[in-house]
Image 1 (cartoon, helix red, strand yellow):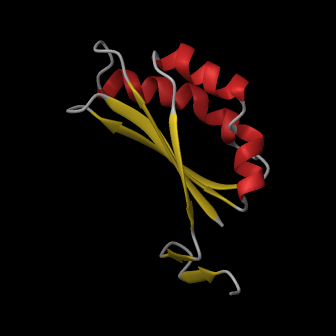
Image 2 (image 1 turned 45 degrees about the vertical axis):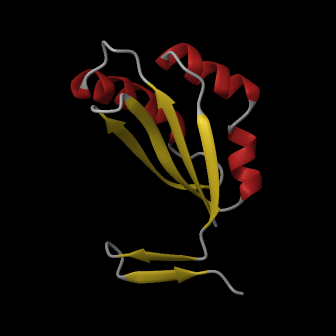
Length: 105
């Protein structure tokens, strides 16, 4: 699995409430998305940073979404292009299902 951390600078006029409203309107786009296990939206009022943490089944699944068009959409919607960092995610502890997911080495 792959974790992608996406961050972007937010305009000064976006507070926590406005960020949550924007995030809620984009959330349906990620339901049922091929290869996406989970997404968390992020907001930091102090640094004016927004973004998301995505858990993907594969890097190819992530790359299929993070296209130039998607990056342009993020830049237009939030006022700044996204920065994307990828991490291999070999083990996940899921307390909701009481499972530990581990990829074969």
